[in-house]
Image (cartoon, rainbow, N blue to C red; front, side):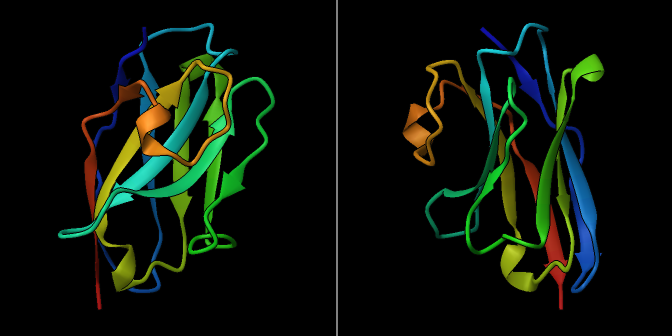
Length: 124
């Protein structure tokens, strides 16, 4: 099992940048895929991007490609979501998720472990 903790989101103006982090409670994450999802009020949870811990290769939703970057820090067991050129439409609760099923998937239901979520608000 793994617990995921996401400290702090924030408020930022449109066009600005923000980085959110997700700390995992365990080492030995090589069998895990970490992902970011987001959920805006009244909308379904949406895939943002993922990173298999073993390879570090990243995949992104089209809506964020070129603006968002996922990275990991092995020493800190932490994954980051760097968000640039933010738009009001990016306002949502951002969730970190993990699965150890060996699957690179955009389907939220296939992730077994979730962080508590962190609010990101982009003002126009």
